[in-house]
Image (cartoon, rainbow, N blue to C red; front, side, top):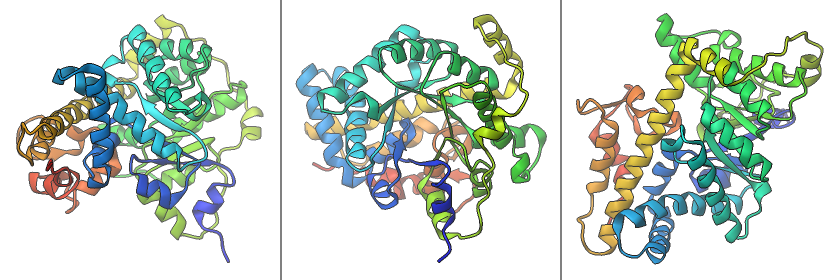
Length: 389
């Protein structure tokens, strides 16, 4: 029987599941799993995770007393940890848990948050080797990751779009980077007025290939994990990458197809290349970032998007907390969630406004018109988060 694309891919690349949905992880059985604020927010609204949400709120209340703002702040982190622990009960490898994106330009607070998150994991019995702390690839974030790595806290540097970010991460000794393939494609399609690219010429694919070859050529131990895919062609063109974090729908598609998969990225081939080494310090990093419009735009957009997801989650947790205490009416959460993402107030959430997980957006956009309506939100994850006692 012919092997599926997924089976072939796993002989050359570690396939990671990009979701906060435990049911998808159980079904797909990846080695690792990654989450982000948008995915946590989506998972938190599913009825089957109501006990996780309530448990996080009760734990936070026990720690902080009944001051709502303090409870919500603690519950945010606890919810991420609780979902992470459940994921670790399913996958044999690692889970990535993200630092609040609003700390992306504060090195010291990022360090403190990373230590705190690891402390919560360790208190629950999880070991450091099974957790990656996700940090945005700002200069400040990279410096925080460098310190955390020296303390044995392993980091996944996310929202990575440019070679300057990749080199700075490798020089800092981070465990893993997550270059965002699909978001790079999004930017170039819009900037160049194109509908598509051949897979081998996809700007996101080209970027990750360049980073992979640079790392292997110069002997860096930092792993490359391609992320944020828009189509199967991107995944197929990056076969051989150290890791690929893939949304459940694409993992299922890979499992359903059986054509031959050709390895495109190979460490031996990369080592044989002649690639000049580039020195990066703060001045050269900031200069490179300033002239790289795509990286500049997408990093800022990504931080803003994850920040919006956290704000939305705070609102959802706030309502859940008030409902638990008999102080709120059910059903307001979906409305607040929608408002948090409808930036221009036109009654629709576009892909640009969402700025979160592409897979979650596609799941909510049931008619495929590129916009999420209040009705679609209520029928999707928002409607699932009914705050009944």
